[in-house]
Length: 357
Image 1 (cartoon, rainbow, N blue to C red):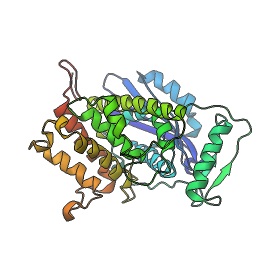
Image 2 (cartoon, rainbow, N blue to C red):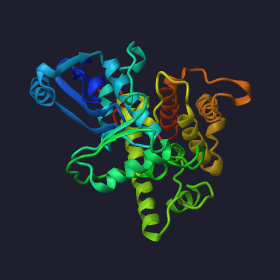
Image 3 (cartoon, rainbow, N blue to C red):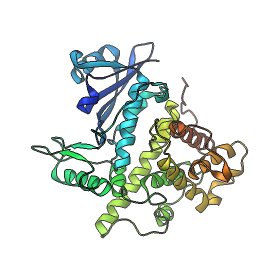
Image 4 (cartoon, one colour):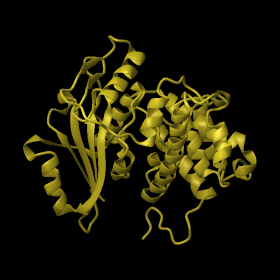
């Protein structure tokens, strides 16, 4: 595969930029991921994935980023730039665009660790929220409320739009914003994501009534009113379906990061989100031990379960440290999850796997 990536000139100063990455096979067929990235606050505001002949992509690229405004960057730096923006936004309580996970499949085997560049997020040490023309009053109020609660009224900058419009949210976005102010632990979005991922890995199907009774770890749902509760339950089921699709995409592409829904800043040692995610995953293992059919006792699977338990313990299970740098934790956890999924829920006969014909 041949990789190529572009962004816009002056992207650090402007704060909002397109980032494109493509991988092209020997026959000239191209897979592209396109991201509209807000480096100052919201992370990936828009994203899409596409496939086409390489010659057709040149016209699309000219439309997205005119040649005079185009800056070629190393594919590893494109991945680092995008994932760093997502991690920054998630720390503030904002999820990436609903199609982000599809678009990032184009990263393939590119590793952000191979990028020597350092990128800065926010403006003058604070988030800068610039409401766009597609942000309606409800969306603006929600962002301002989240930033104010998280940082205080003087902890961020903002610029309001002239004429906002409505914007839709994915199930993952809705749940992340619902849970943004929950303390670390079983009630966080990452813990919910790990919990739902474990359901998709467990070799025995756990019924909806069973897992919905345990999804909040014994606490009441973080919503009030029947309508809100029904919406939350609907989003949980939709997000579970998204996770199952992501696991198949991760298996097909061989990119383990697609198997997990948390980010870790490559330049930071904070793995709190990863720890919560693994705690959520392990709750399913501990709640329904019989459903796992002794999987944790299998010698071939024990290292994967042990690694997930190590990350859940924030790197100190019985005094031991996580054996990978913080920036490699998403790929390492994703690799463990993929190994468990493949062993416990192998692909159906005739289904091609990564690297297959």
